[in-house]
Length: 462
Ligand SMILES: Cc1cc2nc3c(=O)[nH]c(=O)nc-3n(C[C@H](O)[C@H](O)[C@H](O)COP(=O)(O)OP(=O)(O)OC[C@H]3O[C@@H](n4cnc5c(N)ncnc54)[C@H](O)[C@@H]3O)c2cc1C
Image (cartoon, rainbow, N blue to C red):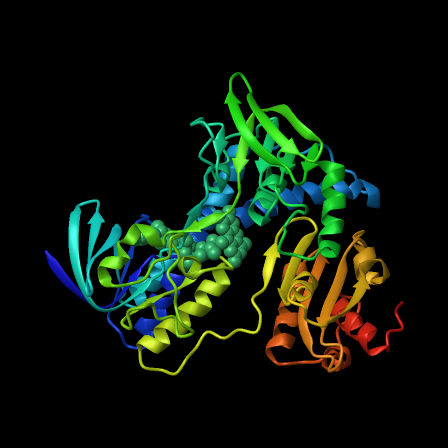
């Protein structure tokens, strides 16, 4: 059976569904194909959303435990892991079901199956009912990414990636998290709240290596006090399965072994570009599996676009959705380009870490002259009234013009707070713009205004 799509979208994650819906809104006849039975891709099914639903539960447990230092004590929580899992699945179900409704309302044809290119204008989709051949005028590849697996790891159900961790089968007594990046740290926080003892092994010299060291420090201090061990500059070289999983480490102090009940592998993600046979359509795919695109999200074939994790870093849902809108609008003949001044990154840890635009570390590496201005939350009335004065708000500025080039925040709700810094950077704001903006008092948002005042020399709160 052969069918035709005016616009074919491969992958229904935040990139793919946004592209499909925007194209339908622009009057195109759209077919959206995804190998999963539900729409939403990694983000909704096994990524952003289930992890945040579980982190919310971890937050409740953590806040209750901290009540004692404010004079309110609760008894130890009764954790029903099945009910926690059901809560998470309920949140995911609401959102993926909502997407199915939005697709239907827009008359987007959805097909479940893995697509492979069979020609410049044709794919074959392996559906549960057999192969379907679909020809298309234009296509958007939004095939996303998958967790990286380490080849020396034995095949053992006690060793899992983020998708396995989100299944929340049990809370192991001793959990080793391999990788101190955002995903590993978020899942570590969930399992710690559920009662696991956590060890983290990170190959680099710092947790969340993309962010500046001063922003990571308060997180590191808090985690060190709660987790069993955090090993930096440390690699895992072997895992021996037995009654426990015996792990061999190599770090600055030499080699050693440790026993764990489970291992979460969170060492990064790789693009899915190699599995689509995109070269058959004339689309260039790199050796790593990325699909290179120009600012209009066109691949090496002008009628085929690519967006999201499959085109490059940072692998983040909000980057994918913005690229999706550009690709769709260009495909529909509009003038558009993906030229953001900054893309925020957030670790929903406790405290949260958020950064956007230029970091001090990158400025130094690239030889850019910058000045940073900080405001410590120890001087923020709102932070102290929450018992969370460990935070820090930092602006990275052009020393001559005062223009804001980057921002980074560590503290409660940093992920929400960073949005106004993104807006400032996109608008080309300088420190005076931010310092003269009246922020409500007492809020954490004030700390952005105070950091700008620190640069201006007008700060009176310190
Ligand atoms: C645990 C975890 C937590 C995360 N948390 C966050 C967060 O808080 N914020 C954030 O911004 N990002 C987060 N991310 C990253 C985010 O999920 C991704 O950046 C985002 O989902 C990428 O969107 P995408 O549209 O490019 O692809 P994906 O969401 O990866 O979707 C791609 C889809 O394409 C389908 N597909 C692939 N190949 C084919 C094929 N050949 N045929 C048909 N279908 C195919 C896949 O089945 C998949 O559903 C997280 C990721 C993980 C794993």
